[in-house]
Image (cartoon, rainbow, N blue to C red; front, side, top):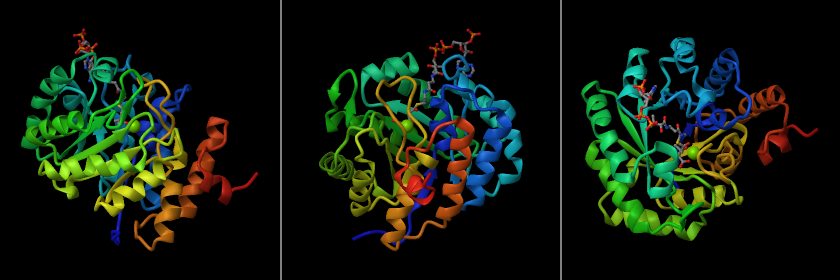
Length: 299
Ligand code: HMG
Ligand code: MG
């Protein structure tokens, strides 16, 4: 069966804007996040407290976060790779964070300058400290299905990293198809293996990029498997600067069109969201890649 309600974890301001060539001014980012909240999104990944030279697009996190003070009734998770990042986030009052692991060595090196093992050791004190502060931690696993350097990724590698993150104390796992190559059979295989490893499906979110147009099919497959948290980015913004051939995330509007058709509640207003994506696309100077945004706003 299918769930009656899905929580959308909106990643446009983080995963989307981290990949824009132009640096978007902090006021525009703040307006974007407010518009997303006005459209009914309750979980909005706001920014990252990573090394500013690694992701210059999000180097304004210290200036952005205070502009979101009136949104404290929303969940505004932020990415933190290490203790330095967590300290920066906590100093600004962040109440929810995410660490980001990789199932492959190539991407761990490219994205974190660490081996998989070293990066998990880097996360351990971060998760421990956050838990003490009552700050829930999401644990991403990138390259869950395919990797641009290593090809297809064995399910057992993903399960091993997922278990380690759960042992560290993350409250939620997000399974990343960083370069958007997965197909539904792989999604079923991974979710089945994670279930067999004793990881409850309630703690699993899916994070599909749409490079090969498979993100919606993969999402529907995950919903059928019991997943109820889905990552998406408004207008289909996104990608990862450290993974070649990564394009945007599943567009939130495309997801909403499918969920509304299936009678699954999200609390998000599709028209307001699409208008926001058009507003941002106008600002960025190119159309949204979302089919639903284009259909609702032709021309
Ligand atoms: P490193 O070069 O190994 O850093 O980078 P280090 O630990 O050796 O530290 C070097 C210097 O950086 C030190 O300064 C630190 O204090 C400073 P010094 O003592 O030399 O003056 N530093 C920091 N400064 C500010 N904030 C920090 C920070 N950390 C260290 N947090 C590091 C290692 C992890 C820092 C770097 O690799 C990094 O920042 N990587 C982040 C990459 C990133 O953000 N990628 C995109 C997000 S992941 C993604 O998009 C995938 C996802 O969407 C899921 C999916 O699609 O699969 C989540
Ligand atoms: Mg991503």
